[in-house]
Amino acid sequence: MDNQTLKPKNKTFFEKVYEYFTQDMAIDLGTANTLVYTKSKGIILNEPSVVAVQKNENNQNRVLAVGQEAKHMLGRTPGSIVSVRPIKDGVIADFEITQKMLKYFIAKSNKNTPKLIRPSIIICVPYGITQVEKKAVKESALSAGARDVYLIEEPMAAAIGAGLPITEPTGNMIVDIGGGTTGIAVISLGGIVDCESIKVAGDKLDEAIISYVRKKFNLLIGERTAENIKIELGTAYPDTAKRTMEIKGRDLIKGTPKTIEITNHQINEALTDCLNEIVNAVGTALEKTPPELAADIVDSGIVLTGGGANLGNLDILLRERTGLPITIAENPLYCVVLGAGKALDQIDLLKRLSIN
Image (cartoon, rainbow, N blue to C red):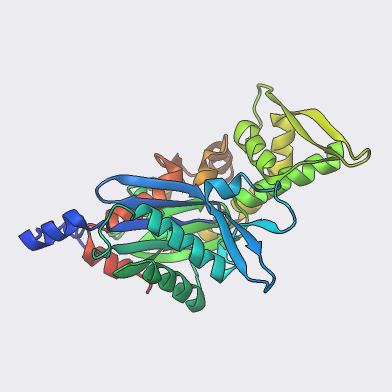
């Protein structure tokens, strides 16, 4: 396929008028965050994939809050209210709550559009999603008022968002480190040649920090504290400079609140096992890559996307362990939704990449 496929086709007057009023959108339905992109405004929503629910007497869920408001409730709710992350390890763990969350985000993003105008929606889903999960995602979008729903696999969308030449007959490797999964994909001629997907990503890094602090300091901390530690001190390769941070939690021996100081070197130690799993998965993907495409990757290197790409010195670690050039994409956190957004203007490419 030549590069002309990537150029939008000329539209008729009526198509232009319809698009002016239609808020077509692309959605990155992630384990940690959900992002929404529209052609006219770019990224208009970036909120945590969290839902606060309350169970009634009939054991039915009543949604109290979604997104940022629900995340603030994590670890702080009374017994009758639970903050739920319906997407676990890159897969839908709770279909009902995922549908309600997706419907809420679509309605919020589409609130200024006339109800008679129904948008086309692209939704990014993990590689290897099941037919049942595909159906649940599509039905959620359709019930929220979508005209058409297209599903694109996250590694492919990330590659488009990172600006890789996916339609050319050359090998491109992308490592997309999200909240629930890390996808390592080799892409050529608009298709995924091979993809290794492991359930070691941002959430597992947070869990590793919680476990390390508990074992080393007898201190129990929550998910939000662990995530803050990862952002502030997280490093994949030892720094020479020492950085510290005060953290608060519950002393497991005395049962009272306690404050300690932790260093970036200790966090590097906490993350070592998880990072080794990611590096080993990259090695496995490279071993499975056909020789001609592997030769291309030697020249082009590996591109890192996803929120995990922002972990300090991760590119240095992978460069040392693989011997290949490592590039962190511009705006790695947004690559998936931006890639899907580009596909909104390229209907032929979209139909080819869709896994409906």
